Image (tube, rainbow, N blue to C red; front, side, top):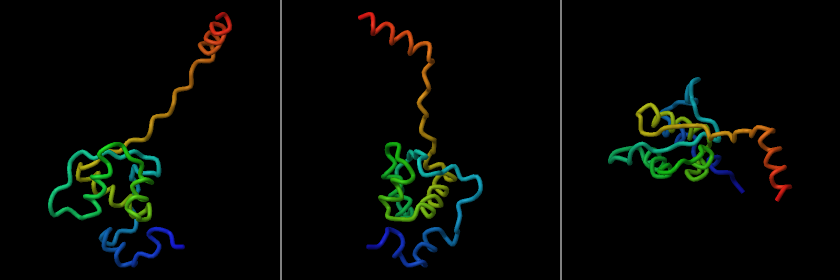
Amino acid sequence: MSRPGRDDAPDRLYTLTQGRSSSGPDNPFDLVTLVVAECDPVPGMQSEHAAILRLTEHPTAVVEIAAELKLPVSITRILLSDLLAAGRVSARHPRRAAVPDPDILEQVLVGLRNL
């Protein structure tokens, strides 16, 4: 069984990224970065870029986009960088749950016990 992206002709991946092998040092995209489209696809746009914009109508993780496109994450990150530079997508990291104050938890526990 082959993995997605592994059997693609290397020249296809080279063409998709216009020969780039990395997306740059200031790339904000990691596997869990949420990506949201800021516009709809336009005629003449690269098909992978248009597919990303359709997939990201709602916040979608980079790893999910790569899986849907059946492309390696590294290639997906390069394509996302192109869209970010053009202002067509925005990226944000998922919010981390705030750790509640232990005193508040203790008060809730006492209140529940008193019921």
